[in-house]
Image (cartoon, rainbow, N blue to C red; front, side):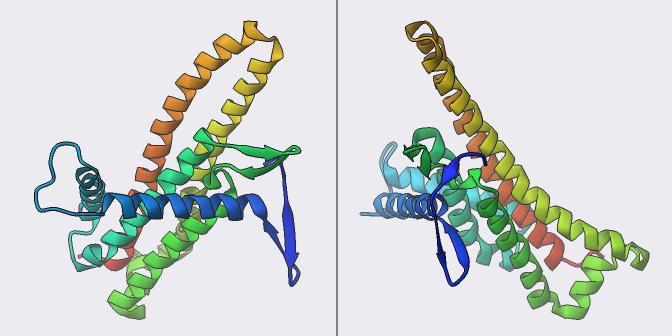
Amino acid sequence: MGEKTATFSIAGLTFDWSIIISTTVTFAIVFFLAFWMSRKLVMKPAGTSKQNFLEWIIDFTNGIVDGSLPNRTGTNLKFFAFSMFMFIFVANQLGVAFVVDFNDVTFLRSPTANPLVTMTLALIAIGMSHYLGVQKLGFKNYFKSVYLSPFSALLPINIIEQFTSFLTLGLRLFGNIFAGEMVLSLLWELAKSAGVVSFVPAFLLTMIWQAFSLFVGSIQAYVFVTLTTVYVSEKTEIEE
């Protein structure tokens, strides 16, 4: 948003190199972290081993799912929740640790600082919730539960609600991560503004803000996965 990015076109479609590179790097980091932590598994890992940390993440995301979907649908959703949490968490932190620019063109940053990425994630989450609702309840019961509940007169409002859920899920994640990166860029400009006089306080503020951004990125990953399970629960459970 505002920075220059490199693009290319295929068959009339324009692709952004920064999104492709950033999401690919995020995928690679998540894969290698999961691969590394899952090597040489034992029944009773000792101390603060990498296996303990992996199991803690899995238990954490499983707990999120069980809070909204303590049923078979939730059981089938646990791996998705783990994968989504890991991807969003790493994506949120990527721009805090690394921003790669060349000739004023950005090639690497947090993928979730781009609205196209966060809205795509939101589309996956919301689309999956509707798909699972139809799959479990059948189209008739799904339509009645989602759009005609508690009263059929609320149909227009319920339709609007599906769009607002999609927008808020994606824009909330984008807004928080984009704002964090904007503050970091402003602190960097402050650091360069007056030499050593501005560099020292700007450096200290940057360290503080990076720690805060780590916290915000973690919370946003948690919120996204939590809301996804809530939306799935709303579409797959019939209110008595």
